[in-house]
Length: 171
Image (tube, rainbow, N blue to C red; front, side, top):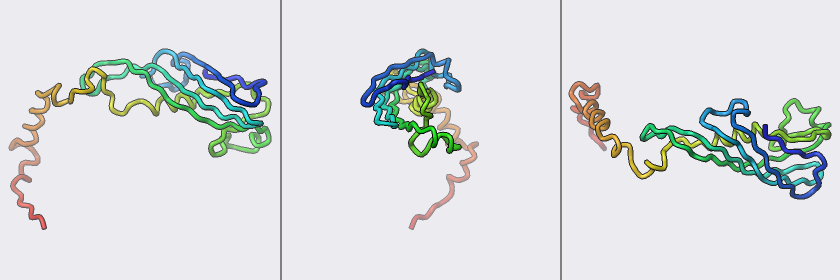
């Protein structure tokens, strides 16, 4: 779990570092492996805490072009606002008030595990391409697959063959 101690924290900037194994984080995607690390600064101003941090973890991804597995480090910036106020904490049914997360006055640690998990998952690439194949297109790597698909589309037994004979007039 990724927890930051706020017990006895003084006003001003306070640096921190925390880490845990990715398998310890509930609902963490299986692509993540190894140690999840987070480091940054918490700025305390009275009853407000502002967290600026950087999280990172290694992943094992499958390349969309080659189908091979490769390792990539995923990094994410995290910024959160906390407010220490027991009265508001007790009155609220939802412990997040807009952009602020409410904490009780007697809190000793902040658990940011869920925020880190969400940010790392969001930063997974949509298109997973191994650095070895970054400059190679799918068509170049697998030309045999492309020609078979073109024959299916352009062939007479294609469901679109009847549409080739239509005359479309453009205005």
